[in-house]
Length: 85
Picture 1 (cartoon, rainbow, N blue to C red):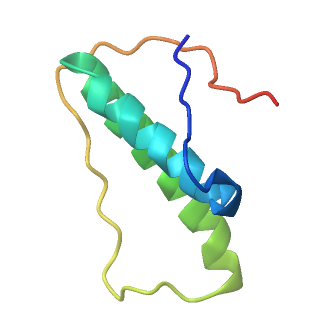
Picture 2 (cartoon, rainbow, N blue to C red):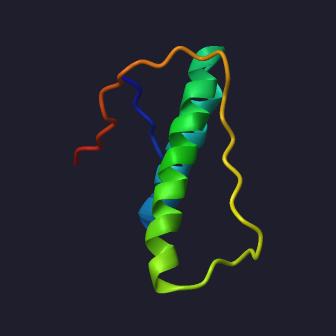
């Protein structure tokens, strides 16, 4: 398990910024096929969230979304990433 320590004025840091920082750190540590798998997983989550938002508003871009499919990647079932307080 990796611990991330925030120093300085951490109390002013929105939780969304902390989550983004952790995600960027984790992505930066991945190599090889794991990076492609993470990219594909995040793309799937992004598409799902965009589909939920599309019900409430028009898409920002008038072009249809493009799906990027990573090739030659072995798919494995992963345990969900959870954050506990």
